[in-house]
Image 1: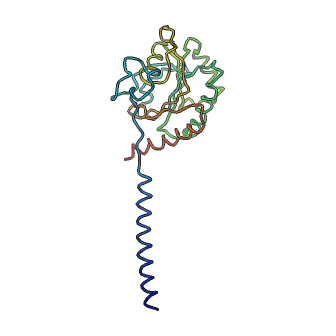
Image 2: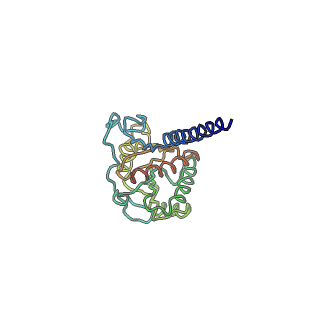
Length: 224
């Protein structure tokens, strides 16, 4: 009888060791680092993409830009060099989705305010209305931290081209007018190489949570 229990004990020890190994393998398999996709124009709804690049399948990046922020300062792509950032399109007089989007941007700002790698960039789609003075008033109202979040205005043609050819983020208004656009609720996650790594519904709290998780995932990419 004693020998039986000894044999059973040895079996239990071996079984426990094997179980631990199997559980570890399963855990590591389920937690393998998965990089975020790199979005190309061909992967996005054609209504959001300029017709000249709708079928582009690789090498897409955010173009150089030069705009003016809420403090009257020139903001260019160089201000975002080696930064991860979240971009969107809005206008200060919008009474529908913009207040929700801006509130969610405020929440993102709160999460990343002490992170030197991450910034925010909001483009006005009505630059003729959103002057520097108007943007400053809006920024103060929304608690914008200047070092983290630029709200920009500028040449409408440039903003339109950025929206349609770079960020793949807004719709043409369909009336044939030059550079008129209908902004969407999209937030875009941009990496340090100026590539789009995610699209999110800026009015949906669950997608904002996912965006914050994806920022952490993207940061891991630079530590690999």
